[in-house]
Image 1 (cartoon, rainbow, N blue to C red):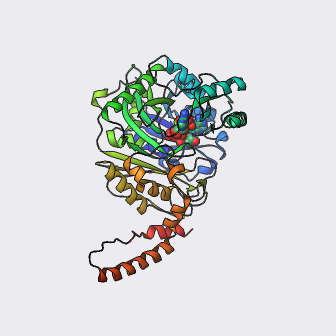
Image 2 (cartoon, protein in one colour; image 1 turned 45 degrees about the vertical axis):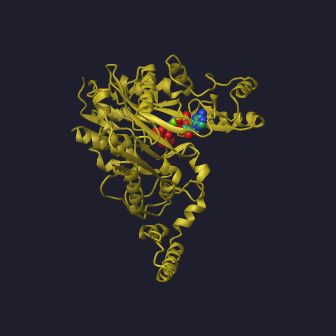
Image 3 (cartoon, rainbow, N blue to C red; image 1 turned 30 degrees about the horizontal axis):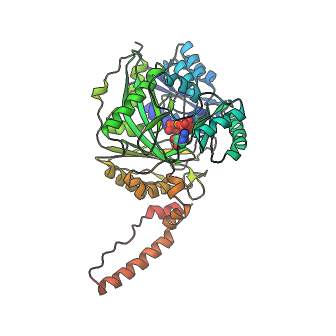
Length: 499
Ligand code: ADP
Ligand code: ADP
Ligand code: MG
């Protein structure tokens, strides 16, 4: 067992701060690294020590594993926490760190390598009894042969980059006539985004839910799960709203999917935190999708329902400690919802919207957690992921968590940029969401930007509300039994328009 005394967080933004907070509570010193674009960033201010490692571009800063290891050696750092994105799923970096005598807070380089390739992951898992989406188990080399496989699987099919991540490198093909064309695009996309053009085919499940399971293993062969997260509200195959537990799984299914996730982790001798993703069809049959070998963006919803600080647990097991809890000790209470606050315009195809946070006031109150990395007046750098914050609410049950989220979003004051928040309010209030019946097609099926415009053009809305009230008052004098409520108004929404 090695006692970790100093951790370097090889990341930025909300996740760098989130990790440092847990480290500080454990009495561990923290080191931040940052790019020239992040000089004033909150993670830099929070850390005990901070080192600039290069220009804004990630490949000259946050992705420079060599520089990061050098900083560790210079400052006497015992362990690196990689967060998510950047170097978190880079097996070579995990190996280099370990060889330099620094603990990598994550799984083994071998596990990262296997699970980093969707194809290698499928192969590793195939020896165990885990259901998988019908598809190819090898990269496509022969296009006519692949097209035959597609016929057997049946259209629509999905062409997927084996090295893909962050929702990138995927192409749906509905019509065999488009196969060659989409293949070409998928390969070129995969090559430029991931430096690996390997693609394969999977059956495209038309209306699936995305449900994933949090797992954690120690270095003594113990692996447990912390129940599931429902992440079906997505745009561009990437999550926007997540919750735990899922509204549709009963305890029997919950235990079955948890057991399958532990099986996947065992298939690659897993330790530390990981997430096993499944796609779930209408019959609630689940199929293994991929494993993310790191802390997940949406881990807070799991923390809120289980009462476990997952980052602390990651640090404990990285020190070589035995898992302090067994599966039977892990319980859940209540319900948690997370919305990702992206600097994107939901009224304009979720296109990134850059700018300065002219107003930035976080919501507060019971059951509200905000994980972010920005303050009022700061500019959102264009070089990185456009996620500026995560807003998480907890309630005694699902309805309370949702109501709290709608209230918290209403309290959140952000001007200067457009964010995904108005879309989130729309989704949370939608009957499909409320009923729990939604799937990954929610945005395509139920969302139109006009719905937002209708809700956010405040002046018009206020005039409409005033008129409505006037009409109602007049109606009520005539007819006392009529019951009408005026549309809710909020001055925060007015503020949002002042950009
Ligand atoms: P999660 O899988 O944790 O729910 P995302 O899919 O949004 O979250 O990914 C988290 C972050 O990691 C994003 O910044 C995303 O762009 C990045 N990311 C994920 N996988 C990869 C990958 N294979 N290559 C590059 N970036 C990735
Ligand atoms: P990434 O590494 O980019 O996260 P995933 O394999 O996890 O890739 O897929 C991301 C999302 O794409 C899923 O959450 C789901 O919405 C959709 N998706 C992936 N595979 C399928 C499939 N076979 N059928 C339908 N949707 C899929
Ligand atoms: Mg995924």
